Image 1 (cartoon, rainbow, N blue to C red):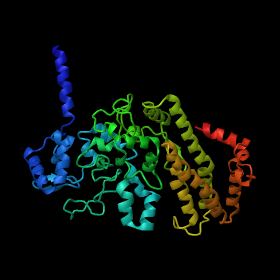
Image 2 (spheres, rainbow, N blue to C red):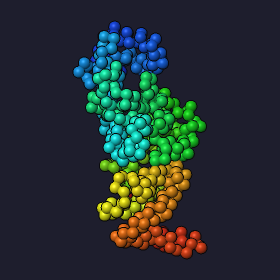
Image 3 (cartoon, helix red, strand yellow):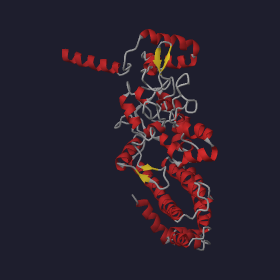
Length: 443
């Protein structure tokens, strides 16, 4: 009995400790912060006061306290503080979550600063649009300005991009999802938390979710989803509809919460040609486990079978041939203008995969039929046959034309040269049936 009491005490003790600040702070300083901000910034104070942090006496200085040697530290009312609260800071109390974030695709989103996406924004539009556009979602490298009152340069602050590169070397911004200063789990569980960034012509997950039955079920039953519950296990604590968090992060009966948003994804659908991720079979199994909380095994298997087939269709029929042609054009140095994106065919190819191809793949992944077809493969078809191929032919190069002829001789493309008076016979031809059977079974 005595041993049992001891165990209970230890469990309770460490459970409470997990909510407390990693380091003790001067209570007078903490009180001074609270008293002042209650008057000077009442909105921040009210958010904090009603949050779990406020309820567990985690104060301003616990999160914003800094060492004098920190690059962004400055003296404020008798204490060194930093405006930025980084994943490294949050990791003092939430080490597991901080580690998972640091290893995730979200934390590396700031690497877009080195990509063609950011290049276009910088040179085509200019730095202002790159800052308020690209970097607002992906994150920016925070620049220190010794002359600024809070040590942060205006050109890179404010910024709560998910892949923000912080002065302490950490990557990411927890407040992207847990909006300051409430840090609400209920808010982070809702699709709106993700839709600031996951929307638009190149990755319209917000729009796809809203048109899907998942989105329809969520928005018509939102109040039944138990969003503020401490325990939030799909199929146990709620069952009306999944949100983004449900599928990509939240707990199931077999899986714990994860802040690594790629942990359940088989495919990387961002690049021109889809790629399977490392340990993709395990990650697909993780996602299927989420599905099985509400669906039967055959339903889940069927969905992934259809989804994979669409990805294979896009890759084999359009993405790989277009990329081969584009690579040959660049290898032979055939483009008239040497600056990136200064030729029509570069834009056509870019939109083929970066916009249309992504929309199709994401539409299939999230059961959004309109995006899989009308906003997806429909646009891919038009772009590939009537924009990209003609632009490539206009270069009038023998090697390029030979490659185009080879591509177009594939039975997948022979519908263009067939008599289409009888559409049914054309669709059901042996060539098409054989081809698409292969696409369904590609791994």
